[in-house]
Length: 112
Length: 114
Image (cartoon, rainbow over all chains, first blue to last red; front, top):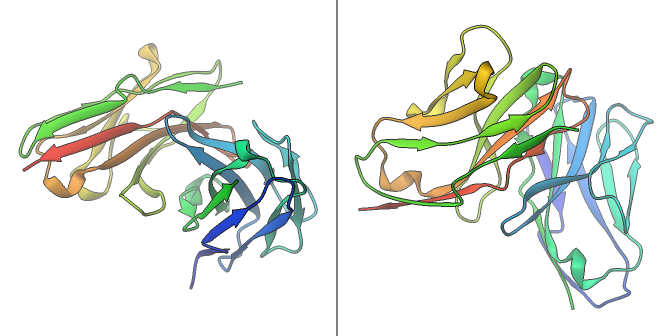
């Protein structure tokens, strides 16, 4: 099993450009999440999908959209990137409480 | 909504010293508690978790944590740290079944000096 995979690993954008971060899991987990990590802020939940076909806003959803394409894939889209979105983005998945530990390797995004 | 406080943002210890990292949460109901570790340049790994039962939980790499309900605390401990424990440590909580995601503390950067 690959676990949780994310692409790309690194990305540099100019202000106003758009891009989609991809996330996939092969553990048959129901729930998937997008977090951002900023220095001194910990991780903050952007959006989550508790099950296929549903998505909900987390703590910091502004400027982002998500798509739960199927049970395996959960993408995060920045329609018009801003420097404040410079961050490391982590995708995670879970199947209930007992499997709340699976994070992807992260995408380091810089917006100039 | 729940929140998590980690009081020590930076901790520097010598090898073989004992470690205790503080974590307090605020939430009125039942919560599930976690500690994660992030080694330099890597993603988060689960150290240990508490759902119910024995409030003293043991995790990987010799770490343990104690849930004290009356203090809303879930402190992480290790009797003797090693240089390889240098990392960032995050406390996190989630209520209920956990499908709504985790609320993280801001993290503690631990540096172990040889």
